[in-house]
Image (cartoon, rainbow, N blue to C red):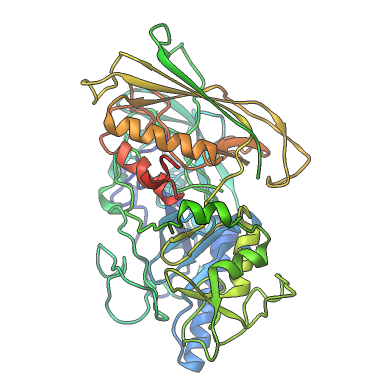
Length: 552
């Protein structure tokens, strides 16, 4: 990202400018902005219409609670505000965004700003990423930049906000104060953020172990109305700082995606002259997704579990892929009155019909049917699980929205291609005691299959071949073997919309992070990075790719 993460802790502005979140008087009109945190600790604002929907749901829940004495809504499906966000749900008690089809979890936050600020006017400031797309600054920076522009400043220093950049309004560029690298910036008008009468932080219940009460959330089964996520998030106030050119970041709709950066001066190091031990893995098309977090910030320690049937049972029992059959295979329908708790998929009580009964039809599953997952014992409306499965990859696997237990073998939608592996003696920064493993991914343009967003339409494949690097040591070779499994399961890439260029129907990374540079980590895609191998192992595990898969 062009702007270093971790901004937002300071309220002082340069050159006499007010801070990014000035004090609000009791009669001030304020607007609410919801943001999600990427793996670098940067906050990415949802668009105004999505924030309006979140606020409306919470307000309706609060009004209902005052009438009936029930608690605050526990989860909000974002697909009802924007179809692009269909896989995403916000868990309110833990302030977490959860991607249902991949298990990706990210922190979210809610900030309020004056109604006459950039947020209230729908003004978003953006910087141009390496692929020519536009990425938004976090909202407190947008507010700060708009204040500076309104007071006729020609240039501002973002240092007091935690960013190592200057912005020149006349030239419309952002300059890295260390490297002097420049990027274009732009001011864009979007939908205004929603007016709110509730500037106080959201919370439910008494003091607990959620992100709002304690830095580390609790563990254990999620059994009550006041659910709390079982995850430890990076501390947003001590986020990793990137000082030079940085990689582009995702839009608010999906997780961060690395990319194969264009060569500017032949900088990519591809020393193939001494390559040896070359291996090529072909991967055919066939009927996903991933988790993200890497590069200097320790990945969340997700309690991912995988059921381990014997190889004999796996051979004898073909995995069903028909949606109703999959749901019934992994959920046991409960008899009698369900527990007094919510279904975290639709937000309705388990004692009420599924909230998806008007959009998801089934001839064999009743709207009021409640099922319990056979291993982890978490309960949901069976129709909600059917809707979640039907909205995903339909590969015969399910993942529990509460605890991430994976049922079946998760596969993806990666187009056919080739994975080429070689080694050479040159060392990576931070791994001087070993050589380097080079992975080259080859994928060509083609026609989308039934598992892709637009079956029958062409898809593009930009930036291939893509070169990636691992240290040739014990842990690096372990990651390599698991990446081979992920490749065979079609989990490395997918067909979708590029977060950096906005191009749709194109091959994009699928949230299993790769290092695409050898000798510079200014972009976030190179070395040294002492946490990368552990982080990518966590990402692979979130997809069900663990050591248990090796040798199968």
